[in-house]
Image (cartoon, rainbow, N blue to C red; front, side):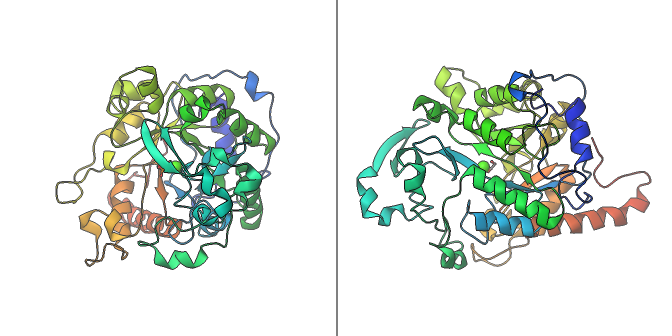
Length: 405
Ligand code: G3P
Ligand code: CA
């Protein structure tokens, strides 16, 4: 079986809930056995799409605790887990020798000190990635050993100057190292922490002979995570690789939906469907043939008006739920510049605003999870929201905070 949330996967998820506040203690091993040979399994996607067993939205730590540490470092993931995140999100790219490492992009001049390494000066180059010209240094031009000589840096030093004190302290982790950390931290917390990997630019990596899917499947398998009750979601902005992964994985699949444009694999194959087409009811039904959730840009759920204020939610959450898909929008951040105008405080774009106000709107809209740079804020916002729901419950007999679907 691949990534369906039906049947045994659903039972598995219910049997081993992740560390949401609604979840209980670990009820099974953090790393369980691989059941059968998943590569021989075939996707079966029929019947209703059940929930993950949560009645509260998941908190997904976007690139780790990116609000506090340079993103995609073990320190960022560890802090996010200790803040109570249910899942940590590594974006994945490949090294020259085919090892998956956690970086938001394969171009690494903004997130590492590669530019200050004279021995790598001649690796600076210009490439076309997904139709865009990009200049810099690229992970696929470095062996893992070479990449390990680099140090991570804060990607947004002007927005998050406090984080620059951590520049140079952490390296670039492999997926294997991230999974090891998650296992250690799950044992420490006494609850299973989930992992939510994203394959970046899969068509591009295929084109240079460094396909991402095989090492992803193999690394998950080695860690005992290609099984129905593993706390894993696998995501991508492309579609073809998700269909492939659905056949090879037994964990849920997430179709990411950008605010505009089209999945690059469709562009590359001459298919003119766009992300707008994917979120029509018919498009969502098609997604549900290979995926279990969508990860939309948050403005597709609660759009902003011309002045940046939140408007009424779109029908996307309801439409997705009708198609049996969960909805995990991205990306929630505390700073004013990333918040709706309703929630900003003061005029400094880098100061923190009232992020709780934004989370409230999305939790009210019925989302099933949120990607956040600030796991602590998201967890607390969920607590505030849950308390408000519980206070309101007596007036709405029979209503539950967030009905299990
Ligand atoms: O993957 C969901 C979220 O991370 C959006 O994508 O990687 O561009 O931040 P990304
Ligand atoms: Ca991502």
